Length: 57
Image 1 (cartoon, rainbow, N blue to C red):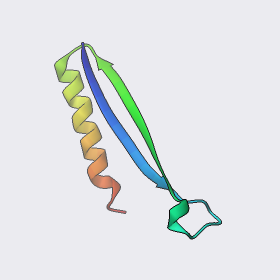
Image 2 (cartoon, rainbow, N blue to C red):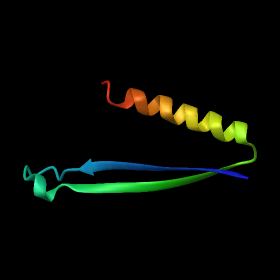
Image 3 (tube, helix red, strand yellow):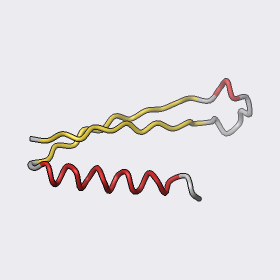
Image 4 (spheres, rainbow, N blue to C red):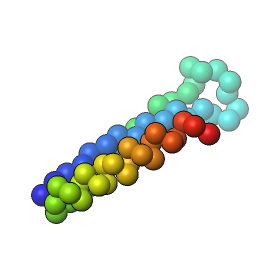
């Protein structure tokens, strides 16, 4: 069994507050199990590819 673990974190700003002290950092931990190393590496590559494009817009 192969396990891919990744963490997503992002900032959430309350709509009414412009004070950055009120911002919160939220994190989500994800675990995915795979039956083979190849499938795990393919999922990791797909995830890395989508993250590279995340900041371009």
